Length: 228
Ligand code: ADP
Ligand code: ADP
Image (cartoon, rainbow, N blue to C red; front, side, top):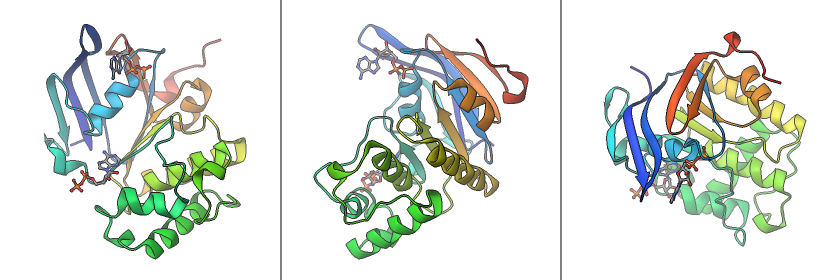
């Protein structure tokens, strides 16, 4: 079964219907691109798939089974808006957010080593030190740290990337997608949300279009052409 499956997922905020019956599956080893205009429900869907928010009706299956909180251990998200604590260092951020679920980073020192190693692997020449305070980093370096944190787990099941290249330069973006390719080759499922259509088409294996809270099209990326 797919790593994560949404079946008839609905979600409303008061009278605003964010998701109106979404059917979607992300399979091991693929990059599924998710595109859609502002307000289409992309972020909501992402949070529901990651188990960060419950849906109103419908089901989310993880490896074919009804999802419960514990199933999301290896789901990681890299957010468009940074979720790093600005007044902590890079290493402290890793430690604070991951020490409960990643035995490897139970100690601060280990968190520092882990993030350094991951950054080296993902973004050669990143120029970030684990001792740097997040608020002193450029936007692009913050985004690298955010993404590296999402990838700290080994054998990641599902990686959700929300506008990951928004503040990255072209070299870092290329490095990121090369790394994403290595993850999918190792079996990770990747959900890529971006308004950069050309980027999505070049990176994703399949693309789903979300419109007014429902998936209106889902096809192989190779079958789509770039709109003007
Ligand atoms: P997208 O990420 O595609 O821009 P969202 O999932 O953010 O779409 O939003 C879908 C709809 O749900 C929008 O109408 C938005 O205003 C609404 N919405 C999203 N999150 C909330 C929230 N926490 N509270 C109220 N309304 C929300
Ligand atoms: P516990 O309650 O057993 O400590 P949590 O479910 O709170 O475990 O998760 C521990 C840490 O894992 C959290 O601090 C959070 O940062 C991270 N985490 C949990 N679920 C997700 C997720 N879906 N995406 C990203 N990080 C997550």
